[in-house]
Amino acid sequence: MSDLSTLTRLCPPPASPPPPTDWPSVEEGLGQTLPADYKNLIDTYGSGGFWDFLRLYQPHAPTEWVDITGPMPTVIRSQLEEDRAQQKNPVPCTPQHLFAMGVTDNGEHLFWITDPEDSPEQWTIAINEARGPRWFTYHGTLTQFLTALLTKTINVPMFPDDLQALTPLFQPDP
Image (cartoon, rainbow, N blue to C red):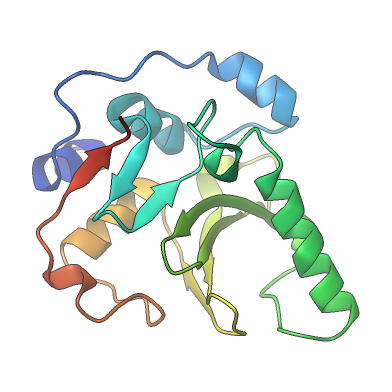
């Protein structure tokens, strides 16, 4: 069973498929190839949130705050670079290798560590504590990460303690 099949079994996607995404155009605009599992995940679930808590950035999202092609990934990277220059909150790698791809309702940001840059299938996931210095890293795809959260095989220390006790749910945007 594929990772996406496992995830959709645990947390069903919306009954109506989302509109198709022109991935070559998105990647050209970003100047970056994105992981195949991410593209499949977005093509399956569309815009919305897991547990009404975790939102993935994606192309053409309802607001610029969760649009992967919008200003947020660049704004967040700039903040991390400034923090690093001022020797504030530690960063697990060079900020240039952090690509913001999600956010929680508490303000934690999810990133890909884009190293090696030309091998998106090998990228690591990193999560930064909201307004804090802690980082959590996960070595696997985004789909594997979500599945691990749903099956309670990982615990992200900065996520709410009761998150994994909630019924798996994906709530599409209206």
